[in-house]
Structures are given as C-alpha cells and as structure tokens.
Amino acid sequence: MMTASTPSLAASLLAAWAACGLLALALTARTPNGRRRPSNRPTLLAHVDEAMILDIAQAALQGGTSIPGALLAIHEAVAESESAGLDVAARTLLLGGTWEEVWGQVPARFQSLRDALQPAWEDGAAPSALLRQAAEGIRQGRSRRAREAAARLGAHLVLPLGLCFLPAFVMLGIVPVIASVGLSLFH
View 1 (cartoon, helix red, strand yellow):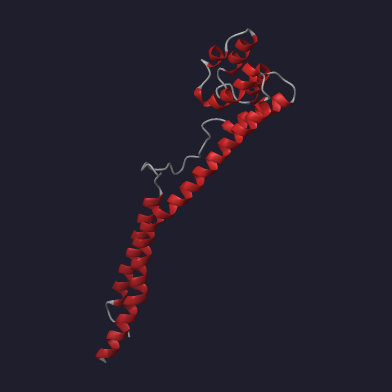
View 2: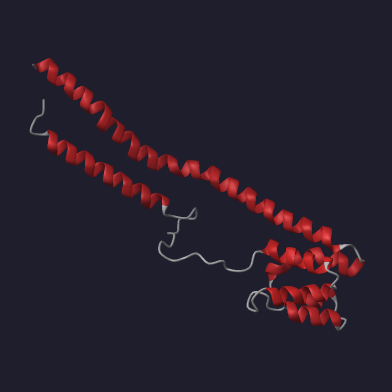
C-alpha cells in the first residue's frame, strides 16, 4: 500500500543520494595536499622525464660518443628550454673545466645525470651501467610512490563510501522493509 507520504519519501531519498554523489565528487576532486585539481585543463609534463634523459645519454655513449658529445646529444634531443646549460657544460668540459665548474650552471634536475657521469669522467669507469642503474632507480622510486598513493586512495575513499552508500542502503533497503512490516501490523 502506498500512502501520500511515499512520493515525498522518494524525493527525499533522491535528493539525499544526489547530495552524497556531489559530496563524493568534491572529496575526490582534491589532491592529497588539499588543493583542488584543475578540471578542464589538459595536464602537460613540466619537463622531459629524468629517466629518459639518462637513457638518451646511455644510448649516445654506447654509440661511441664522449661525455661532452652525450651532453650535446641530450641538448639536441630535448627542447632548449628543457636542457638549458647542457650545451655550455659540454663545451666547458671540452675546454678543460673542472667537473664542479661544468655543472654549476646546469639546473638541479640533471643531478642524477651528473652523479652517474662523474665516475666515468673522473675515474674512467664505464658509464652505461651507472646510467642504467640510475634510470632504473628513478623508475622504481616512481613505481613505489604510485603504489603508496594507491594504498592511500583506499583510506580516502572510505569517507565518501560511508557517507553515500550506508545511508542509501538504510533508506532503500531497511526503511521500506520496516515500513511494510509496520503497515501490515496496523491492518
């Protein structure tokens, strides 16, 4: 049996369900540090991947070029704004500059390239293995951070699930059963 309050109950349930959905969207549309994610802007890479730069250097060195030649190859392979200072570093090495002088003007994001090439330049060590290990380390660190973020996601989803699905279950599953049992007792 339907009573006059059933349509208003359905409308209330629908409104509560919509509010829970909007709350869930608002809670998940934020980054872990609390800032709001941009919604309609395409995401652009801020710079060329650091591991890819190490791979380019490794390929250049395996191809027979020198360390300054590898730095110039990286400079040519990526945009000038991304590789600022690598061409100057290569020329400074060719002119006999010290390792610290060379890397003084290079951005800090090339630190792993610098660290991987330093033993090769100063001690004559084979650079390919060092570059490969550095690139693998970067990729493994990125993979570890992704797994940690996925683990944190479960904790972030508990609140929207609890706020939306539990009240919806109670309102759509338990309240109608109690209402029908209660109505049958009065008839």
